[in-house]
Length: 186
Image 1 (cartoon, rainbow, N blue to C red):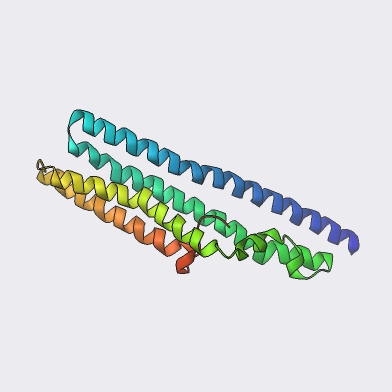
Image 2: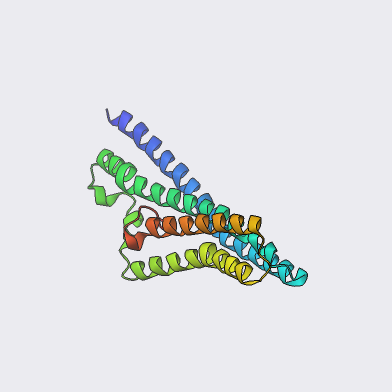
């Protein structure tokens, strides 16, 4: 039986390494999405300003929604991996080792007990909303106030506004400070 426990323990450790590798890759990808968003926003604004065509700003909402949704999905998966390690994998390994569940992968819970965690998560939610929602909504306001609004593009912009607001709702719903399941990290 002890030999079987060692094999199961090795499998659990291999699974831990695998999910942590996935989590690490997702963190890098997620964090780069903010930089990509900033670059796209700067490029679109510069092009629109140079051409003096506010309708070019209508490219920002769909791009920000796609990048923001991808960011949010990856963020939720990062958090789900952390929950899985804390709630499933760690306790199973601790049971095999004959230790209490608090003994396996202590970092997975320890780093979450920081007194400033709530404020960091709140600030991250604000940053996410600014990058993925406020910027494209501002672009729509500039377009609407630009004076040359056609009926077709107005309809498109209203749909875009709805998509951006919908993304904003999900950003807030998934934010840890507000009781969501995701939230920038594990």
